[in-house]
Length: 210
Image (cartoon, rainbow, N blue to C red; front, side, top):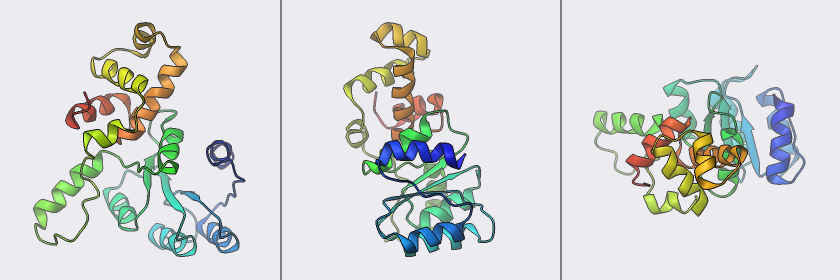
């Protein structure tokens, strides 16, 4: 999986990609190279706990964007990672193509966070109404901000997604190839912070995108 992801990253950043099987190896890379722009890390790797591991990466590569790509669906893991100021949290269960779209979004200055985060933040607010200085990372972005990350064609695709059209139907209606529709949908899923097309359609409605 590391080798496959390295190929994707090379295409995104256009630079050599270093790989490591654990946090200790990743720390060594960060210490040896001060020009690292993006770090993609699993949460649970041998030898070092996830929070210590991510904290060490942040300390050793303070200017790098950090994206967590993990099979964990733990709320505790999500909130702990966010507290470290990561730029993306991508479950391995997302649809094919979403990982690449999420990484491209982060490298373009955006942030990819799962929709589950909004629910967690709401629960935290109800449980602790004070502490106004804490940033609300989970607040849904303004519709105009999200729409600005979508091309006009991707907005057309999103509109058809919300109408419940299949990929083949969207391709036929918009005069696109099925592969192009699939790529657009992966980007849309990443931009709205969903894990699949159904959730993306629901979030699009909630965010006033359609």
